[in-house]
Length: 185
Image 1 (tube, rainbow, N blue to C red):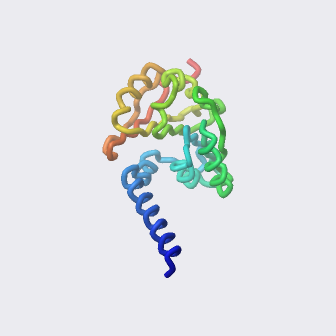
Image 2 (image 1 turned 30 degrees about the horizontal axis):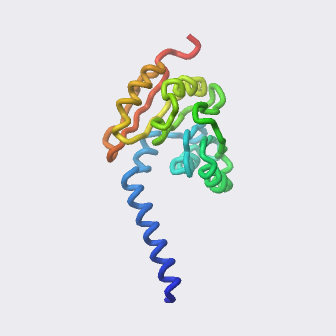
Image 3 (image 1 turned 180 degrees about the horizontal axis):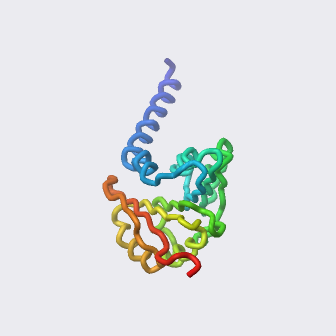
């Protein structure tokens, strides 16, 4: 084995170990099970980054479902677009930080994963997000535990109620919220 090949192998091994450690921390399989996404559903991944959950969601919704991955960062958008080439059920959209950029009455699930703390005005954003939900649509917020109380407070102010929560993720929470009032009333 040449020195260059050894360095490449060590680099790949270190990257795989880092990915494995990150997955142990984020627990994507448990999160996906809790999200309970079904084939044919329409899902939005807000602030998708490089697509950590986007492409897992794409597999879950299947060929007849759709995932819209939104992002504000051009670098992340480039990565998303490149990865989405192999996933025809994924649409990538550039959005503004204060605008979800989603169609009304379409989404069965909207996921905000480690992004809500960056919103310029979380209450206003959640209010703007509400029209995008389908009749029985839900919003799932996954984030680090220190952000939980602020999210719950702001979700209430924006007219949402908590319908369920997962609190046994390492240093994370996953909360599901829905609009308090029936739509159209």
